[in-house]
Image (cartoon, rainbow, N blue to C red; front, top):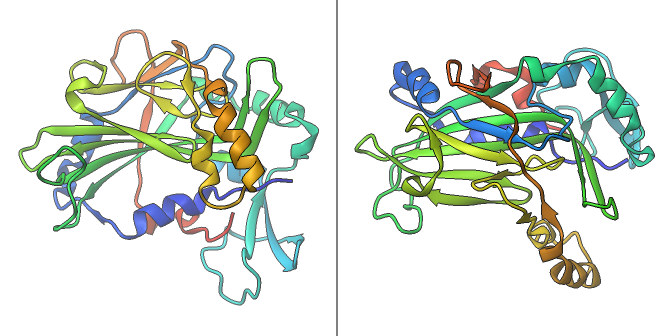
Length: 294
């Protein structure tokens, strides 16, 4: 079964950042810039509570190389006493190589489309940080939204290529300058992402950035059209052979993400959308945000 980093990604990205000094205004910023999301009509998975995933998953410890044993108790938040890396992993009770049938049956009993949510956090950008390309000064704050999906189930149009993994974090960020005005938005996409100047971002109600969420992969796009997955970005870590990398380079423009305008989610009170609840996130206060495994 293939496993990827899931929860540790959130903790790692947040570890070096400090919450906004204007903590009392963080909630206002999160509400002001809450995104509007559109999905493909065939999308099965809505953004959900991490606790939903944890209720389904087993915590497993690597007791010998490649050998895992289920452990009981709360989700670990350190690797103390571990001799192997990774020490822990979260594992849903489905055989990944058996296809998505088991995961589909798990989905039926949840109903996240009726109660979708997004995690939010306002981060103060450290003084002296480099500005983003095209800007003369760094942002003062990053208004960050984290979306968690229980399952990533990407496949090409005729299902000749299938990518799947358990647990999927995606993010949308809005950068706020020292003058209090947005500079840009940044959307996660596979192993990379895209930044766009705020003036060029599609918005609802003047301040809510629109994201088109790709079918299965949950990558976020600024436009509603087939977009290259840029899968070679995922091979830069050195995990692919030279042959695989070359084939990916030749094929990536034909391997696209598909988007649409179904399942609209967004700020409460916005016409035509299902309300997307914001859950303020404090990694220091949430045990799963410190989970050190995969």
